[in-house]
Image 1 (cartoon, rainbow, N blue to C red):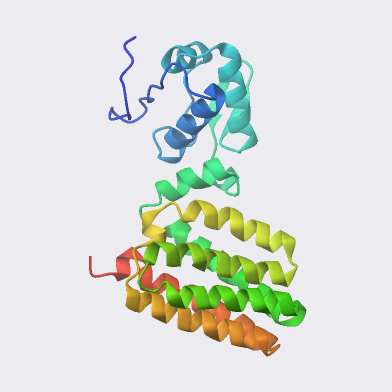
Image 2 (image 1 turned 45 degrees about the vertical axis):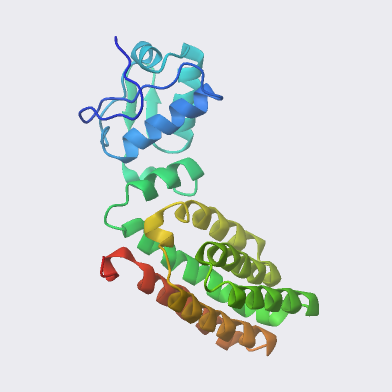
Length: 252
């Protein structure tokens, strides 16, 4: 069998080839198969190629293939049964908080369905955390959030830096809330979403100023211990910011 180089450009169901010596062979196989499944090239109910074929396609050992299939099963992507092969599962069973699965789903989210849901999850988790921050924030918390807000003001003409500091601003508020579980969930889903241009966009300096006005409203509520105001301001900010940058709402 001839192995093509580079990205897969063949017909649906054709697996991409991999370099012979990736840093972590099993991880490379897992990521490639996850992408094939999420993209629909292996739809629910279909079977992955048998083990010997996968070994040949990827140029890896049976042990590596077995490790990869086991990982896919743990992620809810497939069901492996001895004598019955490895069957792709329905989407409802996929573990979306797994970074590899989430990254693939975001990458193939052509209708922005998952990104819309992700923003909704962020609003539902971060808004209560803003209220908790208004209740729990120490003087140090408030001072550090204020410093990040000031830094954002200085970066409205530097969109790349602004986006990075924006993440730090939100994370500092979540940290002040002391809600470790919600913060961990938001950080997981947000980290993968931010890798997509369709999610992060390219805000103009005017949009950065609008965003920071919304940040300031959240901060003032936290500083004034206004829990209800902080929750409402954060929810409105997250949803409004997404509406501004959502690709289908832009002129281009």
